[in-house]
Length: 398
Image 1 (cartoon, rainbow, N blue to C red):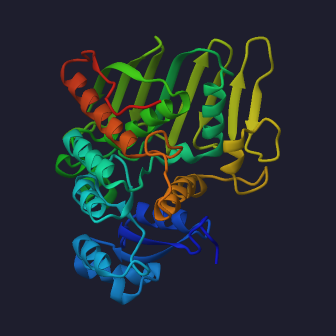
Image 2 (image 1 turned 60 degrees about the horizontal axis):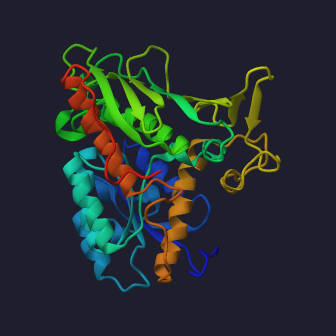
Image 3 (image 1 turned 90 degrees about the vertical axis):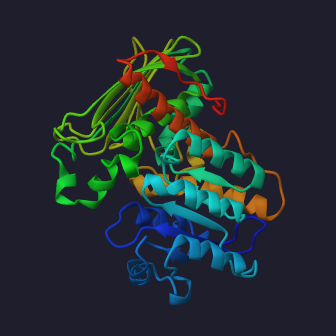
């Protein structure tokens, strides 16, 4: 059995959501156990009690810990002795359920990993962050693209001054799967993402635009000042945006753009970012995550590959790799890096050791709040025909 620092056992995981027909719940489980530091022992896998219990064998969850609801899970697990109860709860459910589940889990003293966006609205996010502060638990938000080794490489290069002063950021997340109204065919993933009662104030922009914004913030560390947005519904009859574009002014005068689409033909999961500095520029594509392109005028194009043995790799990027160079690492491994970093802090908490709650390498509750503020201000700006609105939330950190 692997060890977790001073905690000589695997961390015990509970999963909320992820039942039959779901996608992201299986990703959470795979990522959490990838490094043999955790084991899934309990779950409330669906809002339907029968489906929740029927889904448990798919995860090898024993019947006595296959709960019919998340409330039952938190209540029953809280009653178990410390040597048996779960250490953390992963929330892989639609947006509108995050707040109630996460708040109850945190108040019960459990560490939490929660899908993004953090909550249904900003008020819920701010309240949840206050509860996390008060309880002192580990709380991570799965902006999983920050876990890619070359994203962390880019971050350290930028913060180390390799690109000079950052002057322009262009961040895109392009998909095409909602070109037609799949929600009318009761397609599960489309149905809740296009429903204001379950997704919140934004559709495409809340679902994937937040990832593009978070990636820009994570890579550069620049704090945003103001935003002007235009969100649009192109599929007739749809209730939430399926395309959007924002211009962001950052603290140092940098101009950034965030473009998100779910109606662009032929685009699958094309998250990419371009960053211009006074000394160099870089580009990274999520669909080719093991390459980082760096350009300088008068020089050949530099292609950094994910190679933990290469002298150009930073220590953090190397620590985020699991395979030698040339063996592709991708989505599951990046997701697992969020878990692995959060596990380190869970072990420290279990040992009553101090751990960082603000500037963590993994996205935390403050990043979740900032994501909700981004959604709220972009929606408000769009409703005012692109009016410039504030974008720096008090919880924003570099």
